[in-house]
Image 1 (cartoon, helix red, strand yellow):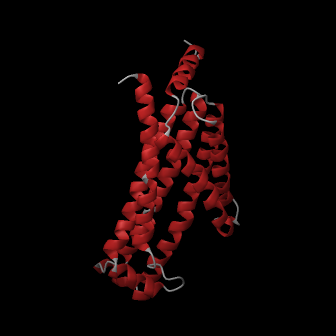
Image 2 (cartoon, one colour):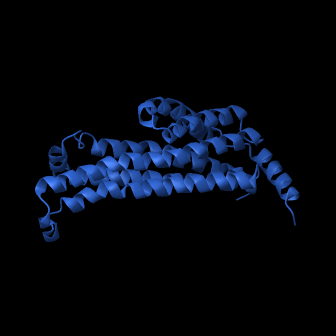
Image 3 (cartoon, one colour):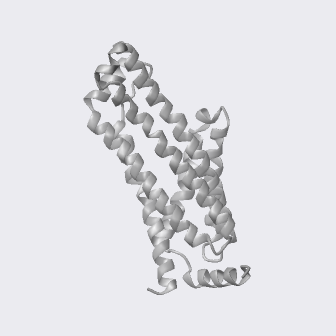
Length: 237
């Protein structure tokens, strides 16, 4: 496979893996829908035990999304390295930290099944205490997950900058990615939870347009090669 063909393939593969976030995310949401009963630990515990298989599928959806995003991160690094290797590497590092944080957050979704598992060593706790622990674990998942979104916001900002500086992708995609990254930084503020509904739309538009572009148009492989050759010539030997 020629370098240009390989570059086009990587771009479309990145778009495809980006697209996979949609079905995996939908699986995660639908499989757990309605199982967390706000303010009612007993009802939540009963729902978890009754629909344990469904809930675990939801966790699997989260983990599959993370795996897909790791692949996207690796492919984006390869695509954007000719623009600025240091910035591309920093962006990849931020994304991988975000993936690690959200993967760790999944532990909080599985911990309730340990608390509610009925093991003999748990007999020192009352039933309502175990239900409260399970509920607390599920409630902890949200804030932990949103910490990962902060890193993804920074990742989008850097990717937007890289696209703006690239010659092989249109600049409007870079502007959209910058706009997509800014809202996730709201979670740095105590008001982040209240403002989070306003973050979804710009992020979805920016990343959605990019993934469609990568799937349909890919990148200008000739210009990518030119920029890669220029970047190699400027590297110290």
